[in-house]
Length: 388
Ligand SMILES: NC(=O)c1ccc[n+]([C@@H]2O[C@H](COP(=O)([O-])OP(=O)(O)OC[C@H]3O[C@@H](n4cnc5c(N)ncnc54)[C@H](OP(=O)(O)O)[C@@H]3O)[C@@H](O)[C@H]2O)c1
Image 1 (cartoon, protein in one colour):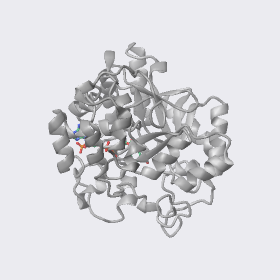
Image 2 (image 1 turned 90 degrees about the horizontal axis):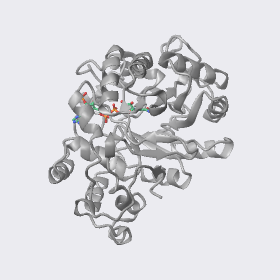
Image 3 (image 1 turned 45 degrees about the vertical axis):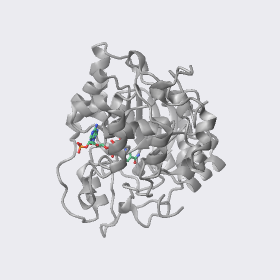
Image 4 (image 1 turned 135 degrees about the vertical axis):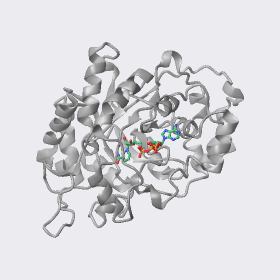
């Protein structure tokens, strides 16, 4: 049993891969307490990418999720406007939805089987088209793919949850979604035309919907077979606690921002205790986020400690950051942008493992630095990062 969820395709022999000691207990005693809770290095050191198959996490309902998926967020202009709050101009244009057809097809050819999208990404249709083409040319079957998408704020009203789900299914051209998440606990007024409805005076049009009611409607989707698994994203610990108290199904998955600058120890401990599998978004520190110009965009990828560990293992900084998630038993969904090189590099992380001292060093970078703050929803009564 590994941290938080089972990881399949794990060879449990006691090989001392890459010279890392295999005495899990003795390694743990040398580590600080919080990281002790997170490490399962000796188990995952045995993961090997035999025949290009990606190891899978088994969620609490028995469904399997490939541990690496492709992030597909391209930052649509309306979102940027809301999140930027006038910080300035974007550096360059994000990935357009139509670019996602070729990117998705290349990713499937590279070995990706897990795709992370959302109604809000505006690219479900293109990802769906690519999937249909790849099923048609016999590269993959539907069963081999794991598609995650998300219910947007304008569908948070319990009566509209099924409409949001049906809209995503239609966009994707699928008859079920492998993992359907509530995108965040925030609710906006019902709207089928705009993702960001506003009031007459131009302010965000919030809706007074309790996310617990949204969750109960998500449970119905599961019962009706429209999704295989359901979960939540961007919820804080207290909000998840309410879901567990008033819901009837424990979420199968929580998707959160997570990387060495934001290690979320309490939240991960909570999820482990309740057998909720976690997916880490922005694993590379989201250098593609359009509001990065105010910051150092590649701060995490260029971090001195990350670079040193990469050099030691003869791997790229991105591979170290992705492997960091895997060592912690988290699924992760790095975005490769337009680069075929990054696409292949980011999934090619199963021929090495990080040493306990690497994990301690990476964990020590924590600065509670959150890149996705949902500043556009400041003042919302269910804002996950203002109310804790
Ligand atoms: N649930 C949510 O609310 C939520 C929020 C955010 C993200 N997500 C999901 O998580 C995914 C990943 O997060 P993200 O896209 O924000 O950021 P990320 O995966 O941390 O970073 C992706 C960017 O890193 C750069 N990159 C990728 N591979 C690289 C490599 N091997 N070497 C050097 N640079 C590399 C590319 O930047 P360039 O394109 O500039 O080269 C790429 O666009 C998203 O795409 C989305 O699916 C979900």
